[in-house]
Image (cartoon, rainbow, N blue to C red; front, side, top):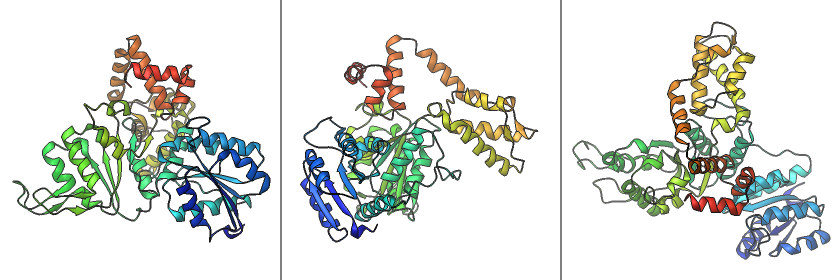
Length: 452
């Protein structure tokens, strides 16, 4: 079916949203029906046959706070409607929107949306009713090392969904996760699937910059601004103009550096050291840190106004020990990569090798697995990797054992367990409470108790 022949129902309690979508779709579709009150959805479905329903995730008259969209999605399914449901969501509800896909929604769009993207999503939904297929994020099954992500586990599929949704926007994104989990790969994937893909992608390890280098490196300097400033030099912000700037290890910068960074982000302009003329900026900002969000929330360590500025959407990357379904797939991928690199036959993973790989906790995450496989491929003489060929570095295991020794206090153990379960569930407190075997209210009490 063509978009021109489609009948669309839009359900949102924001009249501005209804007006904007009506004006956009009026010349594009056959029929548009708008509704502010979700209680009237059943009445509309009994009177009309819709091809697509655009459904908001949140309504002021809350039925199940934070889950209104899921509630009405289930009701639409109960009404036996054959319409494709597209959820309308804000950045903060992306986890719920991903859950809606698992409960039968066709797709979701993030406010504020690009009109072309909304129209293409509607056309895809209508085409799917005629036997077409939904477009999936490239890179999930055909990875290219260094540029694409790889994973089949549920946590990684959730990340692919998030990338697919947030990449075409200009939202600032904070990527959280332990060292070695692939935060830079996620940043590159977001850039590659964004509208800025043909513009620069500039990475800066800001945690490694000294106080004296921070401003010069990020904002640039004029000739003579300081002793070694022999020429005018553009900073990383200017180098990324029009494209994406990735600030790695942002959790490690000082409060003074945070203040300087916040000023640039608020004003969307940069002034080189030693200069007076501001340079306007058009930069999409991605940040990453291995510091837990609970620690960043401590204002003695990190400015809360900066967190809000860089954290329009957060993506939490699970450690490898939480995504065991990916371990052997990643191992086989790295075997192929390094066998090719060192011009050796591609070896198989024996049963003992698989058991060793699956039984290890990976404190160094994917990076540790990658290096272990590289060493094994180099050293092995056979066409099959055995368990004895796979050696893990004591550099990674020592800190992990030390952490276990420290966690002997009962309250510290409970606190650490709560943090791990919340991390495992991507920050979803309802899921975390269920896994911990307590109510959501009890979880809130513990979060307050431990100042998390």
